[in-house]
Amino acid sequence: MAVLELKVNKLRTFLSLLGITIGIFCIIAVLTATDSLERNVRNEVQTLGSDVVYIQKWPWDGGPDFPWWKYVNRPLPKYQELTPIKDKVQSAGLSAFAFSSGGKRVEYKDGYMEGTELFAVSGDYEKIQALTFISGRFFAGKENETGANVAILGANIWEGLFGTAEKAMGKTIAIAGRPCRVIGTLKKKGASLVDGINYDNCVVVPYIYGRTIVDERRYADPFILVKAAPGASVLQLKDELRGVMRSVRRLRPKEEDDFSLNEITAVTGDLNKVFGMVNLGGWLIAGFALIVGGFGIANIMFVTVKERTNIIGLKKAIGARKKVIMMEFLIESMILCLLGGLLGLFLVWMITLAVNSLHFFEFTLTINNIILGVSVSSIVGIIAGFIPAYLAANLDPVVAIRSN
Image (cartoon, rainbow, N blue to C red):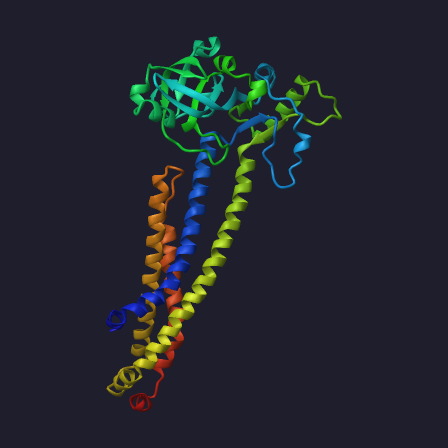
């Protein structure tokens, strides 16, 4: 009977569930976004390595009060600083040098791409930061040592110039006018949410060859990566690195460090705070929407009770119990809210399809969030419909039958 009443008043039913739809959409959309972001960040941290320390000019703890003037005159990391790190830092397992320089032109025959990123790396880079290949390989030992003119193409590069990864293999391209033979192609990944590197737009070359194209001391952002040895902690690694770097740069005991030791876990800690604030904001917005939607449902149920007062009186006169009358209106209220919640979940699912089609990052509507959406809808339905249902169940049958 509750379902039949909802079918009879289709427009009223639709307008009633809009408030619940908006509320559930707000909650689940925000939770899905933050859950997906957090999951992608944690996956990237695992890929990038939570035991990796980046030696750079600039620290990662930026903000509105960031004292940039303290760091602007710092020297850039140098390739030569790798040797003392490898020789003297006992807690260091692997280390590599890298730099990136944007705005490069990549050509193949008559085709070209502007604004690509040149990414030059030393030999152990791939052991620290795993690259996902579709075809080909990373640089061999002699290619790194001699600075061979070979290159690995990101997904956007090989797609734009060749169409498929297989066609790119073995071809000779030109980077800023310098020839390179393609020995590898990377899988499409999207920009990193942690370190900001977008391999899709990169041409990766050996460091020795890369420095013949770009002077990293003037036109690039070089950095050193150091991975902790098995059994060594990041704290121990940072302590040893600080001592060795201060010795290499001949800093006096009272002088401040002229380098930064950055780690991924520091960034993820800040991101967790951001996720928490976004979640709180989503719950506040959704809470107001659910309150408005709940009052809307309650108002409709009061109107429904008023319209069906005669019928309620007749049912009670022929023996209908209070709990039967009450359940009828509670079920009607819950169906309204559940329909609104399911519509909200459907809208979130459509957004996940749209976001995933952009290949920005994996956006997933989880089972937990679906269960949460349905549960919240049911609770709102019970709360919104309880008072109207209670009043209907306690109507005097004689008075109800005589009402107009």
